[in-house]
Structures are given as structure tokens and as C-alpha cells.
Image (cartoon, rainbow, N blue to C red):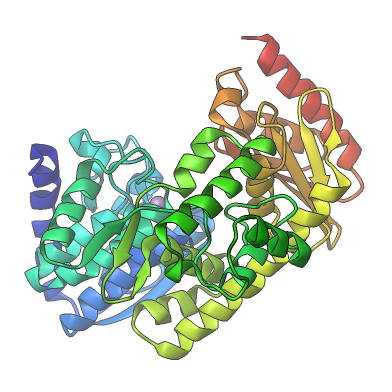
Length: 446
Ligand SMILES: [Mn+2]
């Protein structure tokens, strides 16, 4: 076992001891797939230990939410997948506070029981997520909790930490999960799972131009592959699978999809034995629950509630259908063009961030950033995405979206590669022009 993982693991024993003294524990976690996975692992850990607890999911940790944590009144507080940037404020709370995070933060904790891969030289970007740290905590509480490693993988895959191969904490969790028979691997595929006629129709990952969202396109693709329309992905022969998969790959290359995106989709899948689904599907279910404000359903399905699982499957299918039809719509209309980026207006309800990401990956020119916006209730919200080759040109979307948002009377921020902004409706052109100038400057400064 990696020395650094061992150190992180042992650093968790004081925290796992302290929960034994409490019977009123409050868990706070993030509402994305990683945060919900961490929350499920922690909930099951406390339930098995016979502890009473409350659980709250936040879309982000900010000053207001820190105040809510401060005032929650529990004797023991566990914060997962967030907290690293608020250690100073959390140190002040008169309670036993445990923070299980993987984001960068530079404050050393005085009172908080703080576990973070970064503190042990493991990169929290890809070597351990919120759910991985929660998993180490869980087995530190009780060795019998190793089956929960399956849920940790929904978090790992949800935070895209598996793409360049597993490392750090995740590599250790995989080796234990595999050895104990909880996880197996399988080759990924460009062919979406399920009955082909419907799974190809709603395929957003990958979005296949002329096929996704088109019944005629699906039939002619299957005809070209010599596969009967009634077949399912699971019962294809190796030869049929190869044929269909290479036809899809050719289409993706024709629509200018980057090779790394194709590799990502056809990369290794992690199969979760008790759940009979793979980690990517699990993560997608949790994400669609969390982002639609239904994090509780995600928690419920993770706790084994069948109705929550069915509810999540229905929601996931519904949002996928909406996304595919929006993608097809934008693809046929074409994107608006500025000097330094491409853009679209999203007229469906919500999903601008997800759409922007899919458009960047499957539809837009991969050499220019993509920006999407939607107007609702007098406010315009914008999302921007770029690719690694674009970052290498000097583009920083976090700065660009913040400045452009401010010049349109609002604000913004996020990551260099993925960012958001908001401003009063009607100022779209001011925003787009400002963004064009700022991104142009960033590229020219290089
Ligand atoms: Mn995370």
C-alpha cells in the first residue's frame, strides 16, 4: 500500500473514534455525484453504527452555508467534498467537526479533524475525491464497511478521476474492492447500453450527429452495421460490436470530436456487483438527482430504496431525452460565432452547463471555447467550457467569465476550463462583446 495513502488512512482514526462519543451527528455534503456518494457512504456508516444523524446537501459552500453549519446545533458535524477553503471558520465551531475533502486549501486545522489527500502529497484532482476520503473514514470506523467501496466508485467516476488511470487513494480502493469481490472491470464501448433502437436514439454520450434524436438515423446506422433493429447491446456478437462501434467512431471523427473524448467514452468501466450497474451509470443517476434539486432521491437510492431508484431512472431518462433534443436543435441551427468563441442560447429549461459541455465535446469547434446562456425571470445565466488545447493557448474562463459578467452588471467565476456568469436579462450583447475582448487579450498575451 502506498505510504501516503497509509498515512492519510491512519490520520483518520481520531475522527473515527470521536463519532463513537456522539449520538446527534449532522452530515453536510455537496450535491454532485461525488458529494452524494460521500453522503451515502457516511449515512450507511452511521446507520450501521446505530447513530442518529441529519443530512444536508449544499450546491456550494459559501459564507451563508457556513453560518447554517455553525448554527446546526449538533455535537458532531461531518463535512464531505467541501470545507477545505473554510477550515479557519470551521475551527471556531464549538463541536467536534470532521472535514473529509479533496479540494485545495492552505489553512492548517487547529480543532477540526481534517483529512485531505493534498496534505499527504496525493493530488486531490485525480488521486482521491470526497467519496474516496469518506470511504477511508468508513472502514476506519468499521472494517465491515468495505462493500461501500462500490458507492465510492460512483464518486470517483463522477469527479472524472479515473480517466488517466487510477492513482493514490483510488488505486488502493480499487485493489481492495476487487480483492474482496465488490468491483470488476470491463472494456467500455461507444455503443450505448440497452435496446439499440432506443439507446442510440437518446445517446448523448456520445452525441452522434444524424443518429442521436433521429429515428431514421438510428435505423440506417443499424442497417449499415447489418444489425437487426430489435437487438440489444448486450447480445451483440464480437464482430457485430466491432462493426457498429467502428461505424460510430467514424461518425464521431467526421464531426470533429477529439480523440481523447472518444477514448474517454470507450475507456475502462467499473462494474458494481451489488448494484448490477457500472459506476458511470450510477454517477449519472446521482448527478441528475442532485442537479435537479432532488439530492434526497439520490441518497434514498444509495440507501437501497427501490422507489427512489425507479424515480431516478425515470428522471435520468427524461433529462437525457431533453438534452438530446436540445443538442439536435442547436446542432441543426448552428452556433453563433464571435472572434474568439462560439455560443448558443438555450431555450429549454435549465441544463445550460451540461449542454455547454456536450456541445464543446461533440458539436463545436474544439479549438475555440463554447458559451451558452439562458434567460429566465429577468436574469441571464451563462456557462462556458473549453478544452485542454484551448487552455494551452492562454485562455482562463474563470477570469474571463467573472470580468465579462461584471461588465454586464453581474458576476461570475469557476474553473479555468469550466465557468459560469450571471447578469440582468437584456445585457447579452454587452456580455458577449466583453467576453470576446477578454478572451482575445488572454490569447494575445501568450
Ligand atoms: Mn468532489
